[in-house]
Amino acid sequence: MATSLYSLQAKHKGVLSNEVIDYLLKCFGYALKQNKDNVEGLRTSVKSIVPHAFGHHENCSSSWCGYLINPSTYTHNSLPHGKDLQGQELESDLKEVVDICSEC
Image (cartoon, rainbow, N blue to C red; front, side):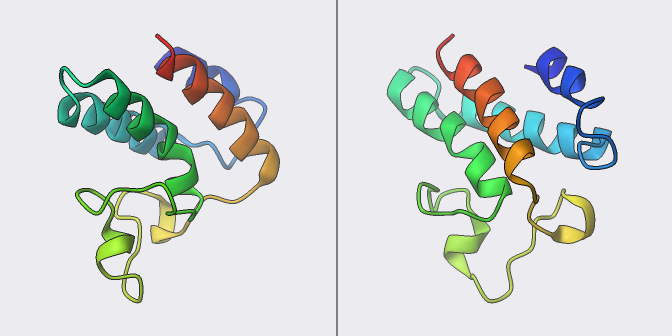
């Protein structure tokens, strides 16, 4: 997953920073740890990473999504300026990477 994310950096200069990639990889790691021995739970969690980062919390779990706990004060701790990611093309490219990884 890391290799695929870093390969997208050239296409999304200035937006897909090392900080953003670290955040996405951290989320992926959390999904793996929280869904040990639960393939379907892992698949669901991994597929919710990108929408969560872009501010779409419909598929998030209250066990890990701060937005669901308190939407009025929520900010992303590990994303630049605590803001949601932006850009339809970036979101589409990241979903493609995550979808591939969720099928592994």
